[in-house]
Length: 126
Image 1 (spheres, rainbow, N blue to C red):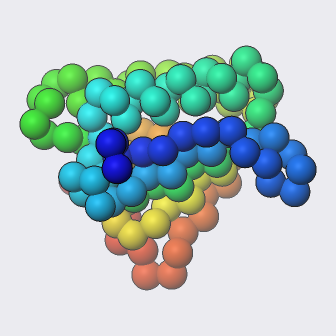
Image 2 (cartoon, rainbow, N blue to C red):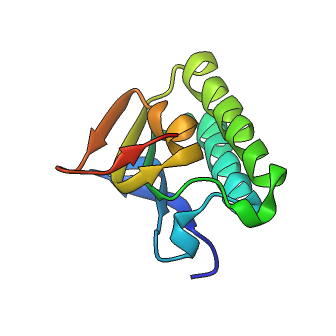
Image 3 (cartoon, one colour):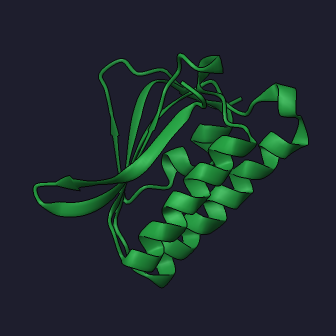
């Protein structure tokens, strides 16, 4: 892995869909500047192309090594999500896997039109 999130465009039952998958194996799935940029670009692309969006979250929260830069990603992604959902009336499914905590829970993890979790998933925000 080169970062905590992989993004792309795929098809779900032949419907083009913007997809992001976070991986806890990369620094605990922490959200840093690159994660913020990749997520924002994916959401902006989905907005431009009017694609539905699916994000599978697995994160320990903001990447503390990056300080305030990682915290700014919460607002950046949330702002793109706001435009995606309200301006374009697009559809966003958030899938919370265990664990989903911290800034990811506080920002894009809980902003979906539909939020799906696994049984016994650890979801937290302090």
